[in-house]
Image 1 (cartoon, one colour):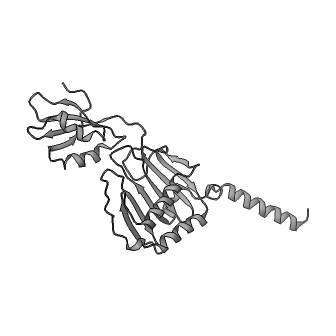
Image 2 (tube, helix red, strand yellow):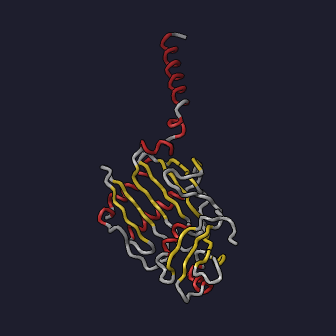
Image 3 (cartoon, rainbow, N blue to C red):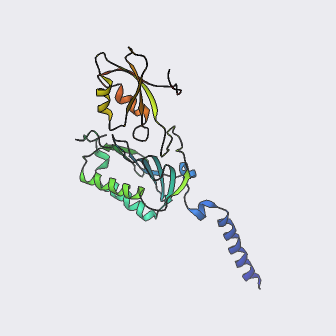
Length: 252
């Protein structure tokens, strides 16, 4: 082997070893390093009064997709996948050519029960534009939403973590029921009142005492987290107060 041949082989071997030791080169962009990448689109599908899939999809300029599944999803926790940058560029071109920058913060829907979809777009300078909608939106926004939905449901995502970084949300497929104490207004029959919350799978568990206006109800966090349900309860005209029950032992 002459010197030139030896140097070529040595250089190739060095490059191979360097590449093999660098996970980012072998595996592509990594969710753990997402803070070092440019986030270009964030797509969040929120909860509804039923069993809607709740998740967030983050799309980065280098082709990294990070899926954060919260509830009613086959992928709870944080998942990642890499796609061809040309596909990301095509998506970003669609955003740039749309009227997205002039959209209002939200579009009024006709179906209160529908899930809210939030879309945030970051342009080349990093300026963000955000809008949201339920069941009604401009045609081009619906098309953009469908493209993001398709990216979120591509096959072969890889699990990164069974939790979601930066949030207290626990993406568990089957959580135990949570207890809430509600004080109903005088004259309100709890059995009739709770019917309005049947879609949230709310149940009356017990009355704190025979003459008390306070009741313990249970919420299904797989349908709606107790914290979210509290917001609805506190706006209910038949409810005086509502709070999480920190006592998990059976009441006597």
